[in-house]
Image 1 (cartoon, rainbow, N blue to C red):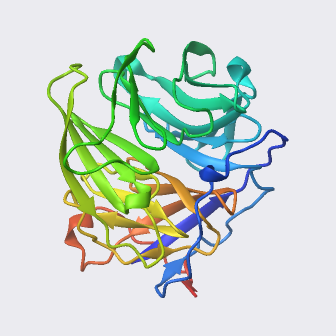
Image 2 (image 1 turned 180 degrees about the vertical axis):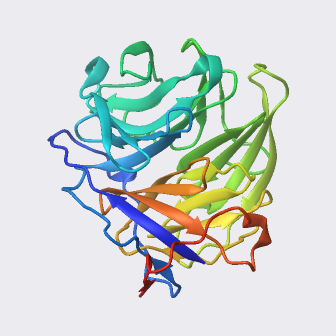
Length: 326
């Protein structure tokens, strides 16, 4: 497998406290081949990086900065569009961001103000606050969020998933304390139809919950998938592409899995990236990964070999555009 890579470094400033839990731990370098996009450009780094979301309707991504509390919008080519937040709704640190679809279009973020308060906020595409809802979890334990097709918002903390409806009203939470055992430090959420996928980091697995019906707010544990990641790596962010394959951020890169979380690719290690945390995939198959240790957003255009026929349709890199690393 080869990759085309574009790394975007953003400069932010701020002094607010950021939880150490929002930093993924880098792992030793595996042996495999990746390639970097010739002419990749860089600018100063983020002050703290954790979340990324892909907005396919506007052809842009959103990246969070934990210290300044800002959300940065970038075009797919890395050029800046706008930024908003920054101590929004009296909350100084923002940890993750996601995008709603259709009638629930908008940008959703989970944030906190030190150890005082936590909240979920919905913005419109221009960064105006639509609503904000207080969180009942302990500030500093929030890690990630997602939105389903009906505008319901899911927020993960240390051991459970908090649920809000499309107007920000709190609904029953998901504890994950059934036959599959409790969740432990979940740091990735992805909603596909009625299926909620949880990247259960400390348990090194993905847990799938199934809602019993639309807006019933009743979920049953369906299955736990144990992941075969590179030794020492744990799963963090999770995203799905248009072909139904899942991407797991971890260590200094990511791995790709089928719908049963059978690994489809070698572990991908990328030299500009350290502490992969958030991940997103756009409609062309391009992958965006946040490095919480490198404090960067890295764009990769996946070029899968013919030995993986499920990935037909992704374009190989142009001649002379790549070199092999390391």
